[in-house]
Length: 351
Ligand code: IPM
Ligand code: MN
Image (cartoon, rainbow, N blue to C red; front, side, top):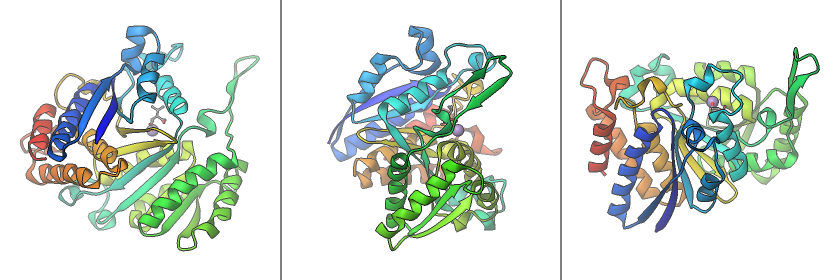
C-alpha cells in the first residue's frame, strides 16, 4: 500500500517520540512491502514561533491531502503561565479537530501483564481490563458560544449538541461494541443536563438497529467512581467532549503509565493518531521520554487502514520490550533505563 502520512511532531517531547514512531513504521513498511511518504508540517507552539499561528493553513492543506495524520503533542509552559496570551497552541489542536472533522476520539485503556504492579490500583481489580472510550471531539462545550459579560466578572461556555452529532459518534460506539463484547455504556448527566437528555434519547432510539448490543446508561459522576473501582465492568463507552476529556485521563491511570496509551481521532475522510500524553516540556530534548504511546498510535493507524497484521507486529514488539525491560526511565524502576532513541531502535529492529 502507498501511504501519504502528514507528520505533526509539535512541541516538547513530540519530535522525539514521533521520530521513534516513524522508525518503527518504516520498519513495518519494509517488512510488508508498503511505501510511506512522510509529510512533516508545523503545529503548536513551534508553529506559533515560526509563523504566528498554531495550525497554519499550509499545515491544514498537508493534513487534508494525506491519508492520515500522525501527531506528537502540543503545549508549551510559556503559554500555560500567561492567561492573557492571544494565541495558544491548544487553539491549533481544536482548530485542527474541527477543520479535519475529527469527530470521534477513540481512547483505549488496557493493561500490560508485565506492568500490572505499576498501576496505583490493586492488581486484582485491573487485571484483564480492556475498555475503549469514544469521546465526541468536535462539538459540545469546547466549541459552543463562550465569552464574558459586560463587567468582565461573568463568564459563560455553552454546551450544545445536535442529534446528528450524537448519532454519528454513537454509531462508531455501537459498531465497536459489535466487534467486541457487545456491551455499550452511554455516559451522560441526564438527571441535570438537557444535552445529556438528547444524548440518551438519541442512543435509545438507535438500540433497535443493534439488537445484539446490551446498552447501559450511567451518569458521569458514577462512572468516574466505578471506572477505577471495577474497570472490568466496562467495554465500550460513548460520551460527550468534556466528560470524555476528564474520564480518559482518569482511565489512563489504570494502565499504570500515560506513556503507553495511544489514541485515534476518526473523521469522515481523514483520521489522526496520537499518544494521549501531553508535550511534557520538562523532558524535552533529554532523550528520556517514553515513545511507546506514539508507536502504539502508529499501530492504530495501520489497523485503521485495514492492516491488522502490521498493527499486531508493532504491539508484539512493544509487549516484548516491556517484558524484557527495554524501557525508558518512567518504567525502569531501579533497573536500567534506556533512552527514547534506544527504545525506538530496539522496537524497529524487533519488527
Ligand atoms: C486532550 C487534551 C486537549 C483537550 C487539550 C490540550 C485542549 O487535554 O486531547 O485530551 O482538552 O481535548
Ligand atoms: Mn485531555
